Image 1 (cartoon, rainbow, N blue to C red):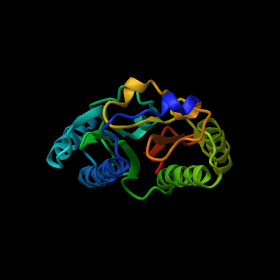
Image 2 (cartoon, rainbow, N blue to C red):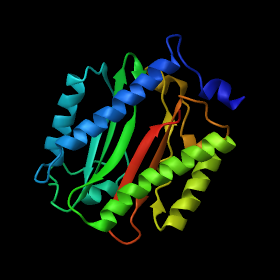
Image 3 (cartoon, helix red, strand yellow):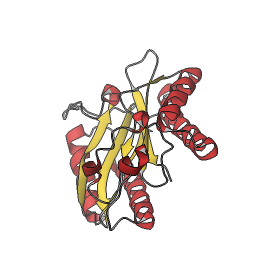
Image 4 (cartoon, rainbow, N blue to C red):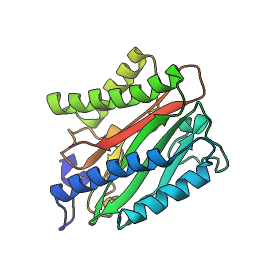
Length: 219
């Protein structure tokens, strides 16, 4: 069975510990966002985020802390952000962190806005809403990863946004999950098990140079 190898875990794996890592990571995203202000550069915000994670007692990071301002919100995980980009008074940004807590991998991301621009706010809200709609489909219909992302693409278009299908979710576990070579959630045909997969949603505005991102553990 595909899931037998791609959903393997270590001897120390615990669903309770995964839930703790999830909660800590989501709380960290909220705290980081509260400290980001217009006039900060990407480099300054990232350094501040790293300091906060250390203060919160993370073990280490398993992926680099990413903060994207403005049109950098359209970039993929592997794309380098401009460290000198300055957050504007009427702007959009997202946070993506990958800390390890108690030997288990957290991964959380969310999008925030400065100012009152309704389109930017709608974009941030849409990424969250789409994530919750897709995750509810996973819970209610037990769809596989490929079907979940097909549904996400369809719903994003119906909502008026473009889904970035280069960003398709991934495994997490007791550190390090990479040894299992599980690939992307969007390429996983089986129904993903509880507490093992991160559902990622990245959307773009249909004609403006910005987007939004949201991710969380399927739990």
